[in-house]
Amino acid sequence: MKFPELIRLTLLATALLLSLPAAGHAEPPAQSIHWGAIGYPDHDRTLALGLTVVDRFTEFDGAGKRYNDIRETMGFNFFSLSWTERLETLKGWNANFTAGGGPTRDGFSRFLQNDVIHKLRGFDPVPVGNKRETDDFMISSSLTRWMSLWGSDDVFFAGVGAAGGSLYYEPYAQAGFRRLSPFAAVPWVSDHLRISAMGRVGRPFGGAAIREVAATSWIAQGSVGIGNYADWSCPCSTPWEIELAATIDSGLFVDHKKASLEERFISVAVRYAAVTFETWNDLINQKDYGPTFGARLTFDLLYLYDRWFLN
Image (tube, rainbow, N blue to C red; front, side, top):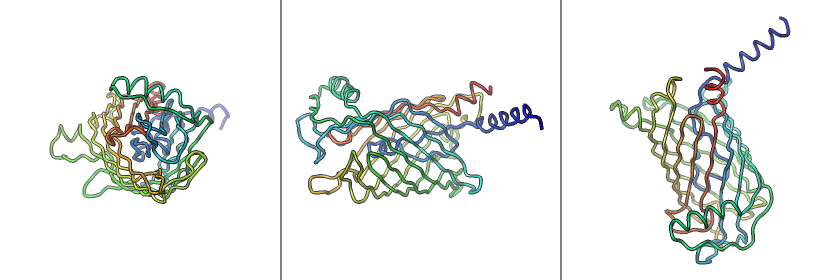
């Protein structure tokens, strides 16, 4: 085989590999699920770039009350890359690798909290004392088994994973279902409504940023999505989705007596074509300190490659 021919076949094989559409919601950096981000594993092949990820930890609330023994405010501004691949040697299994990192600075998230959100809602600004100013990172990897149960279309999952970096470390196990159609007998509803739920148990260990963590952590997350799911596999249609999620976290952080601090969050994600914007907030806790809010903007690189270069 001539060398140019080898190059041509290699490029063709690569193009065919990348052309498979990825209608997923890329997995967030590891710490974001403890701030309330939607954290389900990816069902399909995914390669997604997160241009901005913000997770804010505030030492005080608007009244100056302290959250726990952490004596600084932290604003994690992460860039991220998430890659999910189906394992050919283990049918039904997916492997994921997600890495995130960037400067930990207070300015951007403090502006969003005090100068935007609190002013709009008429709240007192949150005071800031010491600030963490360094570069942080988190890396996570997981194996997930997808399966069909009770006549469903491969939407149930179970898996294990581990996360670690400068913030903390945590091995975990999780199980649930993703985008299950609850009304399969009703055509329009079945095509446009999906529900998801997940349970996760982990064993956190402290890191450079969060030195004291809970001995165990469990998370329960559920969501409802509306979108044109029936058309996601058709290249003639642009996928879209609006998803609302609620999360209960037994707590990554601990109080003054080393007991875990339970947190509750709501999340909203909007996806159109290759772009997903998601934001999460602890407002249902009726408090404004500790892990308070976050947001991320991601781009599905496989979708972009498919639409821009192959069609």
